[in-house]
Image 1 (tube, rainbow, N blue to C red):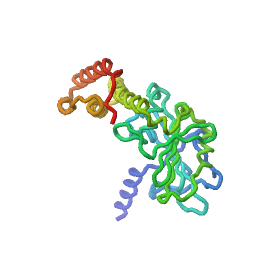
Image 2: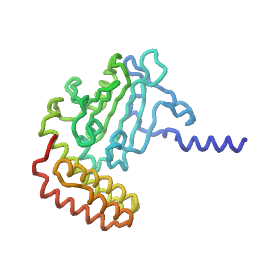
Image 3: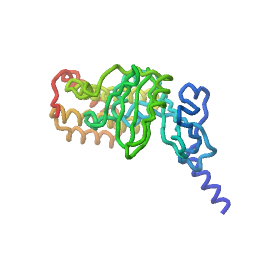
Image 4: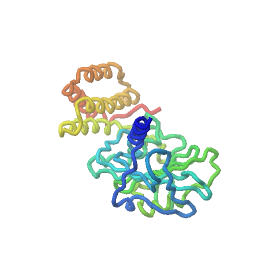
Length: 294
């Protein structure tokens, strides 16, 4: 029984790693109360991960990872705050320091991606907000999610309120804006929904997907990823490009996808490079053309 208990503890520790302490965390997080909100020092659901901590740190792209952001060398910090009289996290904050490399050219585009549909249309509850003289973006549904960038740092603040009755935690938003002033350009919710804005975002996404293909090949050539991972990641981005091309340029993607699957099955790295070059050439000749917006 003792051996089993030791094994169980080790297994749980591996599955729920202890947050890593790091010098300079104060550069990213406010590790004290903000207005009426008290810093949460509980375990944030990681019941077996060790003693209570004020924050967690991870080597990840943070909120942008879901949009296939190239997150190598990024670092994310997270903390939470309790509402007055509460016992559990209410406001969650994540601050991600991006690498400062050429992937940062896409940060403004990528920070929006979680507030848009798969094909790039703004979600109905996606809005631009002015906090003082600064622009942030927000998504309202059972609470609010606020995001902005400050140079190559991405900030997300989120709280849950299924009835949308509680006051917004604007004190926390304002405190982090003071720490990380928004470098988003000024725009309005109406601006997001113009045809010109939609077309630009869609074409930028197609461009970014091809760029990601090149980025993964360069990463593999540097010895930082193996063939299987590279083929998988390049294919993921090419498929999005092909889906967008099908929807907005009317070119069926089925046969192209089948050829990509064959390349992956055969571990054909050069074949995938050739396909990427083919799509880049097509894009160079067609990206200034009109698209079929819904």
